[in-house]
Structure formats: structure tokens, C-alpha cells
Length: 426
Image (cartoon, rainbow, N blue to C red; front, side, top):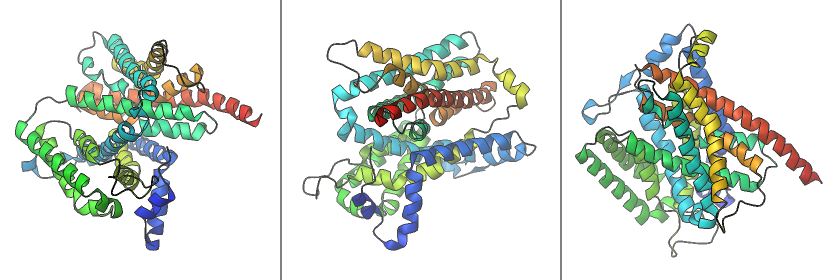
């Protein structure tokens, strides 16, 4: 998916004085850079949390601030999980809407295989987790942890190692990851909402509706002046987020719903030519650096810090059924579920796998999907309270599984990449 045409760059950065900001923004939009910042944030957290200065890390994470009457007195860690990740999920909402309106998900023939594969990649890891943790007190709450895929991390790995892999493989991974995100959003909304306050929820939905009405009505204005969103849409979006947060529904859902309201296509009267990007694409281009350069790395830094306790502590953690269930779900369940679901759906008449793809390539993509990281860490936060012993164990498992899946996928797809390079040379 190419999202940086020269017209879009001219629209977003019309003044030469913004050249440096534009250059930094383009760097942060690169998938490899976003994935690297994510890893750096998590690595710094792990190092600090397991150093002699670990108390400083946990003290920083637990600092509280905010306005209590609005239910917004939160720790820094909670602000990262509920607030910063709302930016990430806003972009997920934009991406989902783009795919359904103008992307691969709008065509049944193109979408059906990766959509079914994504569902298999959610169901099988959850079943493996439940089977492994059966009989472990309190473990069942974490069944959704191994169902998530970190699209930023997975695509970054593919970008690094997959220079000669078929383009259809990248499209398959992106579509699969987008559907995976949609399922993760539904799981968070349905299964991780303990109680709902009706009035704040209704007010929050009303604020989202007003936000969407303004974005739709003045789409051309925001298209020409994206910076106006900071002064008009951002305050309204924050009000909607705060009300949804107060309702008891996880606040990241507000980010998704706000993303869904942004128009993807132009009105006919506004369209100048087919290459002119829609408002959703403009916003995604504008806000992607904030998500990949600030929101997600900061969340990773504040969520990934767990005291492992050295080699002995890590070995002890590997004996915990929750840890084993998460690792097995992500590293084994993801590729197994994706491959099995793909095989089943392609048995149907008229549904075929892209001819440029091979089953060994799909196994590699399945391993990439086993990189849970960001969304898995969020689900772990929602599944287990901070004083629950499974809380830190689950994070150890997510980090271990994500690194393991990334290494296995890199090894397998690296071999396949060399084979395709030789074929291209011939």
C-alpha cells in the first residue's frame, strides 16, 4: 500500500519552512522505524525494571495525575494504556474503514481467504491457551492474550527481510492483521467491560456523532487544512474519549469509533482527480508519526517493564501454565490456525489461494502473526490486575513469544526471500 504520493506530501506540508518536520515525519512513517522504536521502548523498560534502580521505574509508572471528578485521575501507566493507545486505535479505525470502503476488504473474492485465516488465527491460540491453563486458578481470564497480532511489529519484520517476497504475501498479512485488529477490538469491547454507565456512554456516543458530522460536512476544509483538526476535532475527540472512559467501556474503543467517522472518499463535487487522497488517508498520513513515534513506544516502555528475577526467575516463569499457554498460543497456535483455516476455505468451490503464494510462505506469515506485543500487552493489562501474580508472568510470556515468533519468521521467510531473489535473477 503506497500512501505517500507527492500530491499528499504537498497537501500536508505546503510551506518550505516545514521541510524538517516533513522529513522527520516521513522517517517515522517507515514501518521499520516504527517497529524499531517499539522494540527500543520495551528493551529500555526491561533493562530498567531489572536493574538496581528498578524502584524508580515502578514509581514513575505509578505516578497519578488528572481530574478525579471526570474519572481521569490515572497513573502514567494507565494514561498510556487508555489514552496514548487511543491514538493507535484511531489509526486502526481509519485503516479498517479504508479497507472496507476502498481497499481489499471491499471485494469478497480478495478478502475471504485472509479474513477466514485471521479468524482461525484467533480461535486456535485461544483454544490452546485454555487447554494448557485448564485447572489453573484465575488463568481463564487471559484467554484472549494470544489472539492478537501487532501489525506494526509484524509488518516491520516483513519489510526488513522480505524485499523479494511476493507482493500478495504482504497484502495477505496486512488484510489478516487488519481483521485481527477488528476482532481484538470486539473482544475488548465485549469481554473486558465489567460494568457500563449508561449516561456517560450515551453522551460519549453523541460526541462521536457530532465529531463525525463535522468531519463529514467539512471534509474539504480539513483536507486542505489538516492542522485545523488540532483546534476543532481534537478537543471534541478528547471529550468523547473521556466520556467513553467514564462509562466503563475501554477508552481505546472511542479511538476506533472516531476513526470510523472520518470519510474515506471525496464527494463528487470535491474530487479533483483520482490521485487526490481522501480525508482518512490525509489524517492517517498526518497522525501516523505521533502513533509510531510517541504513543506506541511510550506504551511499550510503560507496559513491558517486569521484574524477571534473572535467569532463575525466567526459568521459573516458564513453568507457569499461563506463560506456557501464551507462548504456545502465539508461536504454535497462530501459524497453525492461519494455515488450517486457509486450507479449509480454499477447499470451497471458487475460492483459491493467490497463485503467487506457497503454503510455506503462509506458515511464515502465520509466525509473523504470532508477534502479539502491543495489543497482547493491552489485553494482559485488562485480564489481570497489577497485584495478580499472572500479571507479570503474562508479560514475560508475551515478550518471549513475540521475540521467538519474530526470529522463527525471519529465519523461514529469509530463506524464502533468497529463493525468490534467485528466481528474479534468472
